[in-house]
Length: 261
Image 1 (cartoon, rainbow, N blue to C red):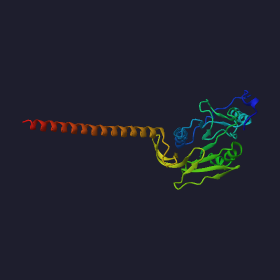
Image 2 (image 1 turned 180 degrees about the vertical axis):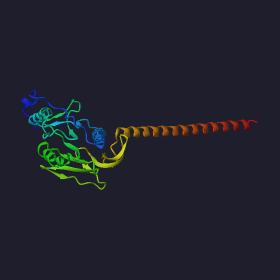
Image 3 (image 1 turned 180 degrees about the horizontal axis):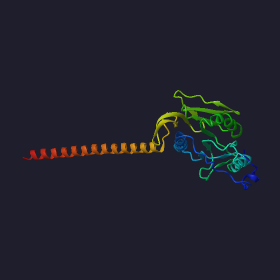
């Protein structure tokens, strides 16, 4: 939650922790996490939005007390009981150019994630569905919460109603609409970063995919190729018309010459 203005930017009496040194759990996690962050940015770019921050695998500090507990756990080698951060999160209406190693709510006007995505694993699934869900609803007041299961490759969506999360019903394609982002979450089978699998992707309102960087580049290449082919066809039509006109002129000249004989 937000801190008193006088203390908001005062130096902390302990060292803020930026990284717990823990690697992601599977190869799917290491590819899916940056994929989602990129797609969030791409979806916003397509909507002409720059007033947002998309974080992946970084800490979220919602109070000085929580930050102190994290620091103590790290310094003393205690079990990690204090929340650190979601897999991916999105905050709208903020300065996009501010440099952030972590999200510190009291330096962001009390702002906390508007949308959170958790990539489940056997070691985190229970906590993601209980403790974190309660924290996101009660403390963060996060409007939408999506959970991605790498085992079943299913996506579950929750939307905050009053103080509790309610399931987001899937559409006819099994996708979940995000009011915060203006896109849908769904599962897509294909190649990402050289790996073929089922991936959680974002879909535009018309059902098309929000593209990855590679897909965007390929689409641009195909668009440029199509434009070149259209220009080439137009040139060929113009050349054919020119040759036809020259042939007609030559025929007229021949006929005039024949009439003078």
